[in-house]
Image (tube, rainbow, N blue to C red):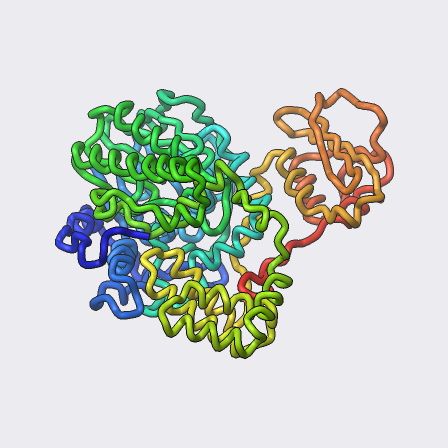
Length: 615
């Protein structure tokens, strides 16, 4: 995966440590955030061990270094009037002082952590009101804490800025596929693992995800073009749209009077993901590189410091240019070399084994694979262009995992032979194939505790040897679940607070993906929703037919044919109540109310703890 050995890394380069500590004002003491019931939703103090001694044998030295940098916690001054709270969630909160108050950029994952971060800022900078809110992009760790900085009733008149398409992509990633993503995220971020030298060290991009209340306040100002300028609380901001980079909706922006450039999550101090292990839409490494190149030219010499939504800032104009250029080259090289090799007939796994970064990039700390990795990024680029199928017809119609596993175990000579052979591979140092063979054994015989424990030991070794934080967490969490079973998922991305920010069409989409199609095959019903406070004044026709729930919006006074079996006239709040099972009290109805009950009877609840490492 890398051409540079541990011994060749520039350990004498301490500039990251100097920058990570620069501008420190004060920390939250203790560094623990709790919810209203006293439950710990984030514990920054648990990472104190990272700065108390040298790297143990249970960690990759490069990841240990990165983890110690990410674990620094507190309020930091970036430049005059610009501050960051770091180490109180996976992401950073940036605060920019205006004429009357403070503009919050990216309010972390959960409301509790956001409130704690804002409280830390106010402790040192005074009780400034929040006069603006900016979401850099559509991932949950950059909007979920919105209600922690703008509680209900305080958002009136406060502009909330986001890149065009923000709400659509925030919903599609966090609601439509939210259950599966959250389940896999628990592996990726290792939230069940102990924070310890042999456990969770961080995620490369930060420490870990908080587990508080996820919220969302819909944007009021869309950024629709590069060069757009907005003034918030007397602060001028110049925007660069970067769709399709690290997120489908994302933007960089400049505070010209502060000479400070926000790079969102487009350029951080690690190689990022082209496809995150928790699941997402595959990102476009080609356009990512081009937007970084555009940023170098577009913002020209108008800044002296660049900061991002993770990690620590980079000071000095020339240093920022060099940083951006190397990040640009990183994504361009991965993209172009993957395409070169796939056009020569190599498949994703083959390219991943072949690919090496240029030495100058491989030796740059900020290009190391702490969060994304060269291996899974190359496979993602292949997937973007070629899809899941590698062209070999033997892979076109393979058996599903359990049936395939049973046949592999049979080929290996049965359970005992498969187990013995897997141990032999592990003893010889081939942990990768040992994991493959043992995984087949576990899927063929999920009650075989000896096979599960042996596989767990292999995952321990793979995780503790990994430079990539998310790989480490994935392997170690897999080992934990093989030994202890699946844990309860705490994070909820489909809660009532999130739903209240969604337009009606997206609420209906979120219902459509929960319909149990086979149970609804033979039913056909039509319901009209007239939402009286919908700002677009639409009638929403909902149609269930052939197990598919479809809907369309039309002018509120237009009544299509055939007439709906049920029409509900109601407010958005009442609609949310209906979706929450609170009935039709106060709702104007025309037609058969039983149709609504019939519709909801087909809605299924996803399994929040579905198996991952066992069938």
